[in-house]
Image (cartoon, rainbow, N blue to C red; front, side, top):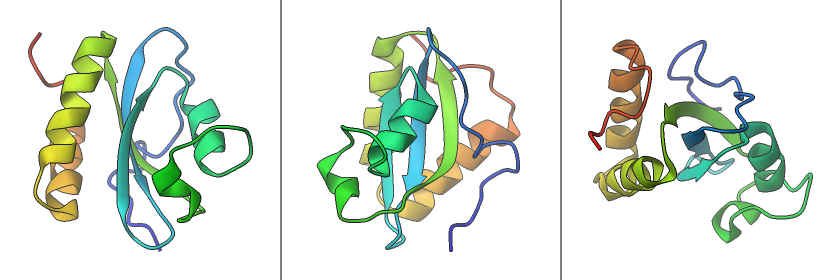
Length: 112
């Protein structure tokens, strides 16, 4: 069902202090982008295993993590999320994550 961007990218990251920008693929094939400091908790929320989660994903479960990118601050994570959401198509969103992952960018690719 979901095409993976990178073998290492779909693994939820146990990151409590830093921010992550993540890309989910919903059961209907649509994409959802968001930010969090705790990917396992947020993924459980999106899949209805715990309270919370975006209204968009509630009717499109189950969701699957496609990729996540660490950011050094909430501000950078929000900027990156806005940039990704502004991309014109799902293919462009996937391509953006793929390029960043292939470059092995250690943190958010946007400059502060």
